[in-house]
Length: 356
Image (tube, rainbow, N blue to C red):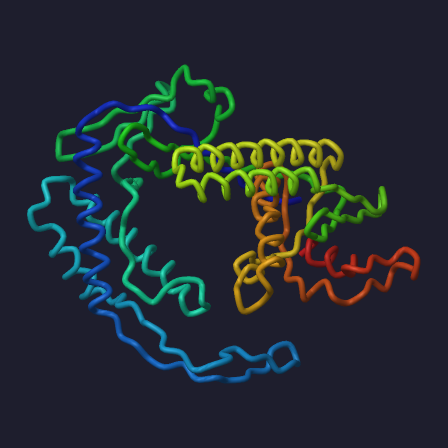
């Protein structure tokens, strides 16, 4: 038995000038909070070291690097909250939402340690305001969400009669995100499913190669998706060379839509083919595969075309998905003969990871 958690995000249109005013204040407060946290950080050096894990020596810090430590003590957060509450006409819980988002931004920025971000202070550019649960009141009977803006002042959003109403029947509402013209509403559902089989997948550039005892080896061809990517790369290059920004953005949107359409159809087919199955995937980080120091430019471009993470995420919305380290799949299976043994992974390792 596996617990399947599903989250679906839907947009509800809203036309209220108060929302734009709230977002403008939210962004100013969020940037102010990021500035204060940045100025209060302490930097320390982490030196190269080797640790023994699982009976093997592993390099945990390959080189000397300066690591920032974010201030997280209660006294600092209280001073930060008092500073943001000055000249704040909105409900106090909005300040708490700002602080939480600021720490999330800073934790994401710390990716620079692994060369995934620049060592500069983050700047908030996108217009949004993330709401806390304490600022929301959901009426599932009327299908409405009441968001507190100021003490005694509210914004009511309804999803009754929307095209997705039947899809989220019986689901719970999560923390909404306010945009200038719409409200992004997440719906969550949790159910227990019975897993009757397991299929392990190997994520390759042009295919998904899987193995399950009931069927054997399965190969999913990803060349049509690669062709779409290549065609739109050429179109975007031409538009960019001619300085046609509107045409370039049009091609970007078309490419994204065609990619999502292909992935949705692929996932639907996999779910129909492998009923009551748990899918085991390699936990690949595309950022590591497209890094300049790791591979030449042509190889990085090919790696960037295949949306492994999108396929895995879309599939996890419908069936149980287990992620395992690629290093776990290096040992060959001992329960398969030479002719039945996959070159890419040990099925026994993937099976044990999925069952756990």
